[in-house]
Image (spheres, rainbow, N blue to C red):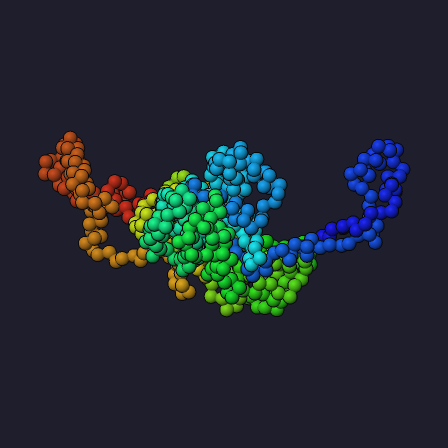
Length: 579
């Protein structure tokens, strides 16, 4: 796309466009001239590439940093982002005028500008003064470009926070200097660690409301350091600030001379977070779409999630491990010499192999395997609780398959970060499950690959997203991915016991009731024998035989008291079973 910019006015400015010369209505001709103006000649224009015009103002792509702001509600996340945009001259004049008007109408800072309104755009957010949805903002300095995700702090919208964190490399965790570490601060910290973020900045905000007290800053720092051993952070820094007034945002605050560390903006410019290096991984491409525009072209489109591919490379189609070669690599503008992780491409293959959405193209030496069962950490996001046996639709990368929660292994106490046994998982709770897929899916651990190690669970009836999950363990090559325990040999005594007492005999409290039931049946047989004129001795013999042979008769006829080892457990649902 190009833009035509007029360099000098035409000499015949009063000339009328020849395309309108024969128009019957002179008023339309005048209206056209007044709004459109005269068209420039080819020699009077300069062709400008808009991307070239803004490219010098952007930092190199290698210095792009994606980060989120998180923490409890009302800790000042939106205000902090608005202040960052203001301090880096990323707010245009018309936006500043609108902010001034909105601050008078919706603001919570008196006569001052309410910078939270720069990112809280929903009417419900402005009315309630909270963040509901994830808001993305972009700005850059002379050293770096940034993409910010402003995530909600309210517990009800924890799912939106997890969505923003899943694509971030660094997290700013805000703490209100007056309130200290809150349960939601702990929850957001754990979710941040859960999705693999290693670098965090603990921004202790609202220092102006505690008289810029160094003692208060140090106390909160000690409290947060106490929970660090349970988190996986490798790079942690602490910054005292006031987002409302701009203290320690872009310039050191004279009201906190005791703090000699980096400002928040300096920390963001110099941070080198540990990230998943998808570029050095084996080639992997989950197929999203089979591109079939005509009879002579069949391509397989998707985004590369690891490694690099070039024409002629040998690849393997998973599942099934069918081998072929790449015939050509197509990008958005046509055929290219190669592509790497993060690029969306279409591959054509040398052989006619069956490839469909959900399959994964990998390198020949890749050890990734099909999985039927995985162990995963999940964040449960639905109102109704999760129990073992729940049936869902699992979406992992581009594959979609029915799945069942085989077991709920444990739940995390958000106050201590310790795991313990649980039989139910409530909304916004974090736990570990064993998940079984109805058909094999190509999956690996989240630490190895983000896209092939994360999934969501969807309600098959309402299409509601119920949980997000992170794969922690998969079956190693050669292992049998089956959680069914091996059958134990049954002794002769146990078989006789099961024959006599049935399934109920496994519960001692049922023994007496079962014997009384059979004794009553034997007595009834004796009474009937006497009524039919049989002798007393013969009636007693029939009663004894009935009492002794009743278990065998029950087993043959399926009556009450027969062994019932196949009685289903209502809390356990296998693959393919209904509920």
